[in-house]
Image (cartoon, rainbow, N blue to C red; front, side, top):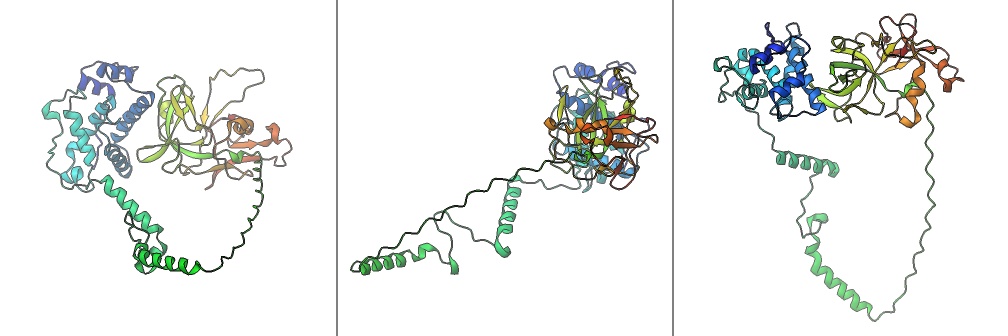
Length: 449
């Protein structure tokens, strides 16, 4: 199956074709166009980033040179995304829906019935395409003969919808069975009855017998001399031991969580000309705080001040080194959950940094996978969960990050004031756990941050 279209439409041609609006070949603003097309629809900063992301994804789906396995993975991720959404943003229309439809519909036309609605077909993509081309919500001008012919009755395989109540009950039963000793099933208790006793008898079954026995014992004890029982002395509680004070963690670059990151895509920040917003896979498990899902991968949103210093094309689909345990910060309305490591020339004393560059990203070893830990040789150890901003660990250690004559990234403890007495005086190379050194392209003796 393929969605690759040799005549994949450009953004401007799509706008002209569907909305009868003229756009310049360059320099137009996506969100000005969005406002022209959908004047009553307003987008948050995060939605603007998502719109840009989906436009980039639509370009990737239209590529002719992409590996088929990767292409199928993209389609599967899109199908999963649309399984719980009416539009790409959820229930709000956008320019991204029109662009994705334009680039995807030519391929959907060629799909077989099995590819459309078979057991492994892309049901949700087909449903979405049919909705976009026919719903007045999107306002697309599409001639009837140009639409994808979709028969809603022609469904080869029907996926059984998950009943939330049944799923909740199933999990409840599994939990109860897991808690039962030796895997034995537990007897259900009825409200108003006591817990079953040994032999399967209920306390209520013995109530009459027990009551009679108590009366007989009381009657027999009436003529006997009562013997007072000695009181039990209360045991004095041992004084609570004070909690041991947490050991002060020794200052070391290993406290900084450095990982290989994979930039899946980057777009300009909607509110800041100097920033990019990147979607980066850093190997986080599902459910990790400050992460989301994109194209089937768990990702972090990262803002970086690289716009104007590194071409946007060089920020796409590439491996980088990311600092992953800085406290997240909101940059002009977008929450950033990591930092991209980059190198720039060291300034001469008294020189003011005008941020003119050049800037080079730190490249991990070839073959390193997203999420792989990288560390400085001789400074191995476990990183902190989230660095405490008050302790300024990053700010203290970062001056030791530099590059060598062969462009390798190293840590120089000698320039860190708090490590002046440190015996490890060598330059520790930044290496991946699987092997290989992290480097920049041309900058020697640079500042890395």
